[in-house]
Image (cartoon, rainbow, N blue to C red; front, side, top):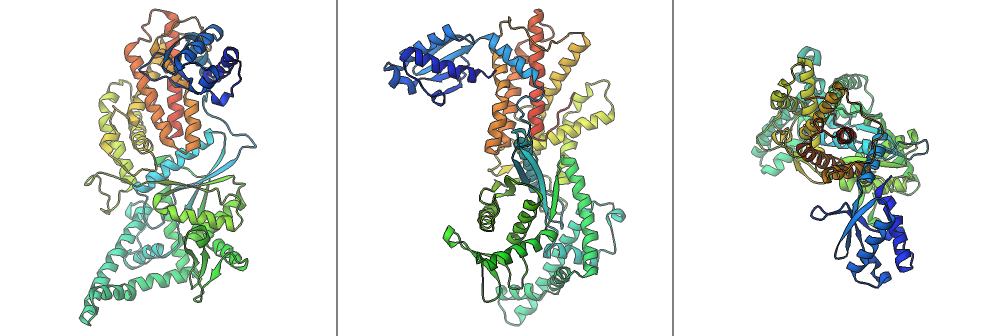
Length: 606
């Protein structure tokens, strides 16, 4: 039973009876009553004044009287100008709680055989460096989005495109050949992605030194600083070697390809560790080394069809001026591909692999133009979902200056961040965990892991993804305020109460009796619980994990006020005690479901 759905036809009948005219159900505006007024739901009566031909207050009064007399869920009403505030009877809230109690996955809609298939791409790392803070936000948004879209009755395929080819990969390979002395992740004890990242940094260090040295030589020959720098970068022997290696890679040179495969395998093993720590998974991984040739083929096909054009130097372009954009390069004069070509190739493979209804790309807002162009190109090339692809664009994430510098000193490393969050959680929650007398060290470490990662994930996901954000580790781990640990602690507290009830032999019925008078706080809590389904639906419609995060916080705040004001296990009225246990159990259930949609675990005890 949805109270709003029951009330809408009742209001339609009221207007028909009172004023002799029918109104459409979509004209009925019911909203949650503002906290400063008495009531649960408010009916806006202004749209009916032309029918009633009476003042707003009179119209509201007449509709209110009709509803109290004819609709059992309404116990009383009050009128504030053109707003009719309706108080729902306690019995209706108990009935509603019984319905929530009966559904293990309340608010979650399961997919059917005929459900649309939504593909979500996220992560998209390069194989020349470890994952960093930006990747963390990307992955967490991708996972949460996939869970929320699936919870709205869609089939979901989670994909990743790994950028495993190009000059940046060759830089790491060349640096390892020159200065690596054959070291491996095993011989150094380093994760593979960190080892390769070190060589990418080493290449850049040697390259800069080389450019600096050449600049001195060219300036001595009479070139100004700008000219000397441009020539030095062009003539750098190291950069030339890297380009030669890329050409060999493109030509399938067995030695270069063998080294590439070996070093990439180290990186993938490192990525897998980080993904596992973050709770990130994929259903299908694509690799740029496979998709770029498919993209070239598709562009050449478009060229033959007259969709694209070739310039005198042999480069291939798309003219997007009719769409209000510019001309876009698709193939360079030497026939090599650009990122756009690769994305077209990946789209082709995905369309072959899956019957996609909607494609969502989770990529930072610096790529807004890229995806605007990609959508147009895919549509021109005949992909049914091209026009409707969604670029889930998100802002940058940074840490406060001077905190948590990475091992390179320039970006924040994902592994360092995860490690620090878990360590911080261990320290901050020590006093709470120490109160658990029968806890093992292993369980204490597991709680610290759940709390640390919960703090990280929640802090990032509670923010509107379109906004740039500052991630503050200290603030995120706080057990008070709008944080993951605050929500997790409340869940653990409820589970503790339920365990004590079970130990005391208190039997909780599957269906509650309705003859109990509830307090305002209890009614408010049931009302908020019932809104979970609408929030899941809204989060799916708006592609907004922050909707779920902030709903969970509001629910926990409301429960903690109730917990502070009312006893549960020490309540003398047995019916009330049982009601409160059922209410608490369902709050815990919805916290677990909501946090689960965000990819956040909740501990059974803390």
